[in-house]
Amino acid sequence: MSTMAARLEFRDVTKRFADPRAGAVVAVEGVSLNVSDGEVVSLIGPSGCGKSTLLNMGAGLDPPNSGEVLVDGERVGGPSRHVAFMLQKDLLLPWRTIVENVELGQEILGVPRRDRRRRALDLLAKCRLPDFIDHYPHQLSGGMRQRAALARTLAVDPSVLLMDEPFSALDAQTKMVLQQDLGRTLADTGKTALFITHDLVEAVALSDRILVMSPRPGRIIREIVVAIPDRDNPMKRRQHPNVGAYVVELMNLLQIEQAAA
Amino acid sequence: MILASALLFVGFLAAWQWMPALFGIPAFIIPSVGTVWDEFLRMLGHDRLVFHTAITAMQVGIGFILGVLLGIVCGFALGLSPSAEFVLSPYILALQIAPKVAFAPLFIIWFGYTVYPKILVCILIVFFPIMINVLGAVRALDPDIVRLARAFTASRVQVFWKIELPAAMPPLFAGLRIAATLAVIGVLVGELVGGNIGLGYLLAFGEGAGNTAMVFVTIILLTLIGIVLYGLVVLVEGRVLHYLPARARLAT
Ligand SMILES: Nc1ncnc2c1ncn2[C@@H]1O[C@H](COP(=O)(O)OP(=O)(O)OP(=O)(O)O)[C@@H](O)[C@H]1O
Ligand SMILES: [Mg+2]
Image (cartoon, rainbow over the protein chains, first blue to last red):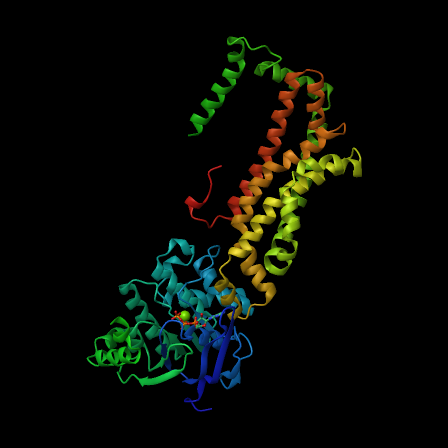
């Protein structure tokens, strides 16, 4: 397979939920998208348009009603060790120390204790948390906790990362620092990522491509290629003069001004 | 702090020794510390006090452990299976509301004047706070944590051992503290209703004989059994829940 082969692919995916009042809610309809190896793609769209639903299907937690999801060309039938996901909530387990939390995924996969500890410590050092390995989650700030969650996600060495608004609960400054960490890590490790966000600048700063979704039932209405250099350096990218133009384009697509009027 | 506690205790003993006499309260209402101590020594020699205390303590221990295990198992079973809870909840509720001590005579009819009815009442009374707390903990668990584990390809068994069980520990220990105080009550009621062994028997005997000091001795020993059990729970809790922030832990 060439390097441009799709790591993650959605083929004409539709997802409905049973709803006591409306009978059925169509969350997403006929969505096709693909993310190539090493590519970072952001998904943006109005609240409730089915972004999280897509991610859950990618993680194998929820099957689509029709269409199929493929990872490395193989149909996703359930959770896979090649896909890891990360949410807005850090979901660190309060009874585990930070390093034990980072080891969770490897532990589930049956990685030997010594190997997983080595990898966890390595990642915590990369995520700049080496002094907090033996602390419990409640002893860390929100930004540090989310960094530990990132380390936990990377620890299983997934080929595809699915992230659902991972930084949306953080303050603006911490957020920028974590975006920088993520941008660098994704570039260094060459990971493939599908990234959900409501933060338009974040989407521009981090991604190769942005997919814009319509209100529910969610479809992809536009694909925007972010032609700004330095994807490994979101901080620098933010300052690029073209960012404003992308943000305006996204605002128009999402009809944000109309909604405010 | 410790000094203040010790001083308070000495003050309490002194007040108990001399205050009743000062207010003209007769010894058959409130016997002095000295009298109670003498009675304690007499009971050690003549009433097989050690034997009766050991019997009661053993019943409390067995009833507590069995009731806790049963409560944990049922709490998880119902918590993890909403349909089972739906079907069984009216019965559980009825059994929870029913005064458990009322079952003591029934159990004695069934099992005679043995240790079994006492242990059974104890199990019944210990069971509920444990089951309810475990059930609540399972329900309160953030489903996203379970989804995260599943996304890491965790099996059902792994989700239980790595997520659901440890997540239930803080409420379980809150339940254990309550259960520890109830366990003694369960056994005592069984002993009071019938039989000729255990501290409950001595208590009823002392009452019949108008021996207030004997009643005091038994009450104190029953309390001590409860304190030991409660202390053990707190000890284990400290080890298991060591990760909780200090403010989330209780002083006693
Ligand atoms: N388990 C479910 N059962 C029923 N309906 C659901 C379920 N999950 C999602 N939905 C519905 O599907 C639609 C899409 O939800 P989803 O969470 O994917 O939206 P979203 O784009 O992630 O929104 P947000 O930006 O607010 O996170 C919503 O209308 C939601 O009510
Ligand atoms: Mg969402």
